[in-house]
Image (cartoon, rainbow, N blue to C red; front, side, top):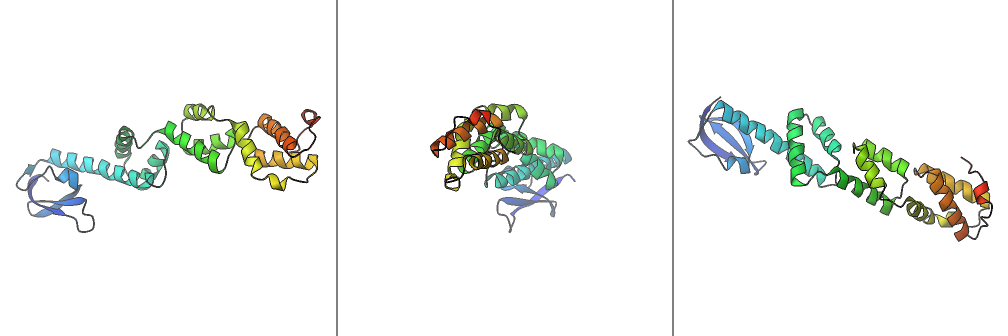
Amino acid sequence: MAGTITALETQKRNPERVNVYLDGEFAFGLAAIAAARLQRGQTLSDAEIAALKAQDAVDQAVDQAVRLLTYRPRSTAEIRRHLGQKGVAPDVIDAALARLEQLGYLDDLAFARFWVANRDEFNPKGPLALRQELAEKGVPRALVDQVLAEVDFSDAAYRALMRRARHLQGQERREVKRRVYDFLARRGFVADTIREVAARVLDDLGTPTTDLDNDTFEE
């Protein structure tokens, strides 16, 4: 496949890519920035062509990942899955992920913090739910533990409940407790947090709480 470059033409559909012609025939495409190092009359060996193609495969994988990342941050595992579903070879994926990390596009710790902060602001959830969500995103457990340790889940649970406080007004004490437990348990909060927050909410609503610690929440 070795040959002499006879033409370098910008692609009509994608001006950021260039078609490379060897000995008068189309040979392969490259990113414009990579093609800028080539010139007509230059002879390419088989090894040089293979290296250019390999680099281009990584460049295209990186571009695909960056396009996906424009919508929201992603974990490394999410990008790996996405590229794999697009048919990108495993070795190319590895190289693309390494470059993305080097460029600062991928950082699983930063991603986990983003995910938890987003949930905390718009839809507070407990550690059980967040741990499951982050595990599904492929975030390493050690990083999940680190991020969850930074969260005040009592405050998160309280804020989640107070958004629905009007639905608890006027309810009997036992019914309020049941609804509080169900609401927070569905969102992955643990029992100790639920008891603590339930007492606080019942107090805010003017419901007596003297025997709260002796009661058992209905599940």
